[in-house]
Length: 406
Image 1 (cartoon, rainbow, N blue to C red):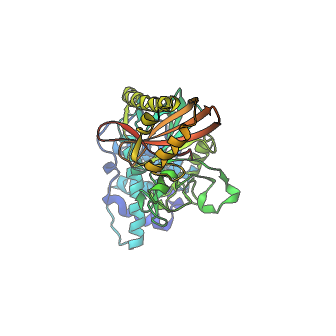
Image 2: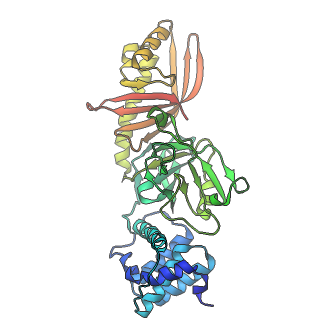
Image 3: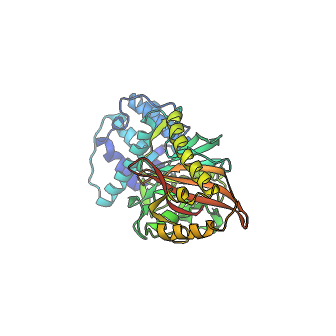
């Protein structure tokens, strides 16, 4: 049985045409990164095939790819590469006329191949952490980070507040790219969210594959900035395909069904943070430590001022542009706090379960989330809070938004 029988007619034409774009063009002369987390099995097999092709071993590459296609007949990119390798082995170059629609589909698959290969060739992340994660609260077992610019989803485990890379997956994002602003723009949002629920296969159309994990877009900061839209999910793919091309959703983050099952097993509904960012900066643990120390010192000073009923010092931590959860601006908030504190004789404020996430897409902003245990001579409450701290031009940290942790 020849493997060409698995190829759809469109891919048969495209694969032959693709000799003009040799596999070796994917495989630049660079060492393969060994410090990244494991890829999904199918992706690892495909990348190994491309590595063999780079070395000119087309026979082994075709044999291995045949096994992959037999196991994953719906992996369109693997079908495409198989056709190209068959032509490359013969040394022939065939350039048939194809329709614009065929060419667009072929180009999208090439983008997927380049995206996957670029990740393989990226510098090792071994011993490094993404600078968007400064500290993870003990209540979060895992954190998800989606690098929208590079079509990659990372799953991190929480090891005493420090992220450890567990695995990473190729992902599809919105057709409009990253940075959602308004409903219908087909963009995937940039920001910090959490999983709100799990929708299983039986509840969904086939488009969403084996399941979906909606996130809480728009969050408090999105709403404050006037961003609109809804229905941003992490979800799988139809069973007729293994993966979708890099920009093919209406704003959701889409991964292969196998990868979705792995992700879902490591998600805690209502808790697991999902950080969506345009690009990811990997730094040493020491670099994150210095940033974390500076910010925690500011948070502690804020807490101490409040507990000491030093209202003037306390209010100094709120930026002129501050907005409260109740919609009060800085002046209204200051008047309210002065009135409240005037009748306080004793205040105790304890903070626990503190997370610090550098907010993507915002200049010098960090989301600080914590459990707040407040007691005074006439009131007690325990709540989950979120504050958005911004570092001003003088290097001082100030709060620009305060809300329930959503």
